Image 1 (cartoon, helix red, strand yellow):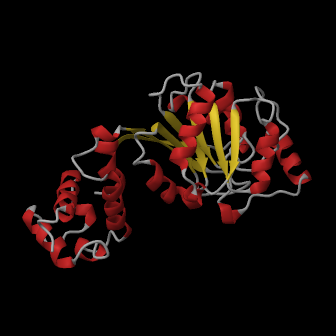
Image 2 (tube, rainbow, N blue to C red):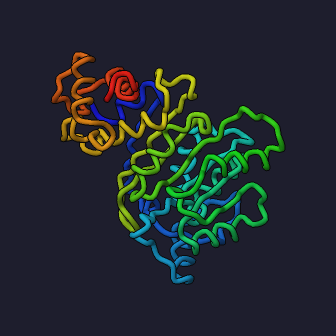
Length: 294
């Protein structure tokens, strides 16, 4: 059992789609910022504008920008974007996907770590009124409060229960960390649709589009703290070749972990991929019970 199959049952529905392309327009680039809203981003003019500004994809930031409007539109469709939806975009680059989101009626909150690209996207959509660009590191920012504040400001108090969505051509070097942050946030986001890509700049690619439909906190398994539960599961799979009594020993004493596994009818030498979801829930609840441990 892997970490994806563990988590999708109680907390989200996951759909993975493989997109293969031999079309040159699928190449990953940093992009122009002078493309007009409602128009498609063009591969050659984007490359020309990029070079004229002396900007190139930065491998250290995992930059790879999608210019294929067909794929961007597919991402938007997969997330079921409706007019007035608040959408978080991580790493907008030059705004190619942002453009498609705006045309679909979305209100976009974009977080871009690269200050140069953040400035370009801000300039591109400065007169639009539907896009807010924040120059920040997503893995370090307080996204929940920022999205709630943005939603309240653009919706003017209407639809308070309407959840935001996440659609992003995700920088590959932060994929794991981003998923750890987003997937427990069912009280903020209803859908997470990501284009995951490990190649950068001017190469033909195979891209995986992964869609998660998050569940509300009240739909989670019976656990005291979803955050601590996800933290335990993440720790377990960070050392998936290790036995749980080793990979979780920074959270609980090894003898408590072994006793909990034995209580659940599981081998004391269990590894994370050998447990089902209910096993993890039972293990967490036992280890969090002060009457059981110590």
